[in-house]
Image 1 (tube, helix red, strand yellow):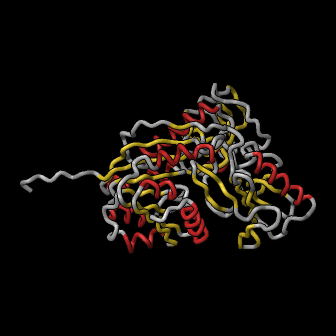
Image 2 (cartoon, helix red, strand yellow):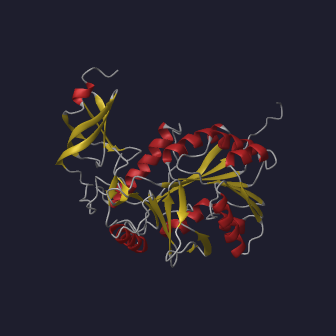
Image 3 (cartoon, rainbow, N blue to C red):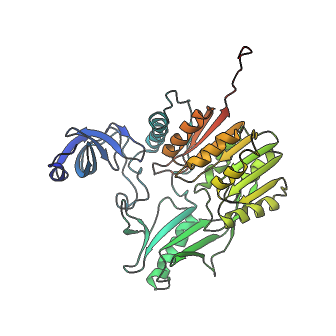
Length: 414
């Protein structure tokens, strides 16, 4: 238990050496009888740190001085690094970023998923370490006239004039919005702006009070994005992968086991995986709880000339509660849930449905590990897995895990 001196110790300085990077992106070290979690560290750094917060035997710390830099440490090029909460890996060279992400996945699968023998897997590097981000959300503080991202661990807006990970199209849009801010042309009740780049145009949405609204005027309401030979219609309020450079490889990995006559897709969005899945499977049913995304998916399937797929606008858990039995033994199931992972009842519904093959696309190794633990307990085994660096300069990583239902052999004397 923490003692009465914990509050005082939170202001003391300690010398630590970073051992490795943990899930969440912090470096781990040990000092004062505690496990120390250090933000913006590199493996091998020798640092002087300050305890910002102490919780029992764990201290959360920030760097006061780099006594001896890690060989993996580089000078962050972004002037907002350390204040902006957007990128937390700019202090690492790119090879170290990739290695850290592989270890983050392994650590989560072992520690949270109880998977001792983690399969070997590769991580696919991003073609562009910078200027890759084709989708973003910028926070707006109308009172002090700031536009950018939240500062790390706060809701204060870090005013950002240039973002090194944005595509040129989105950087131009950021500059345009900043000019409007300077000229007091932005709506006073806006809290954020969402943007997404299409093949030729940019779609912009702003929050107006409690309701997001896709802007009219010079910005396109809907845009088109061509990926792997398929064209997708969407807008700034649609969820879509941030790094389009890696999407062909991601789609191929997710659908490598897709075969048979029937498929179910959960959390299908605007149909990024639905369109290519429909080309491989006889009959597909896609479930999406956002009505606008579901309508975009229908439009995208129609434009592709695919008539073998039904897009259902429903809560994924509710749909499984009602339909798992009816689709028992489906050939292939794909799920791409939000960062929070799948709900417990969604995993239970999948196990009840017992599809022959599962492809789980995840953007969070911790929730992936939690869900895999349940699927393995429910009769599945990991067939293969792969990782994709969709988010360079951050600790985030995309993972695709393929699972197969375990075949139970029956003894003839049973």
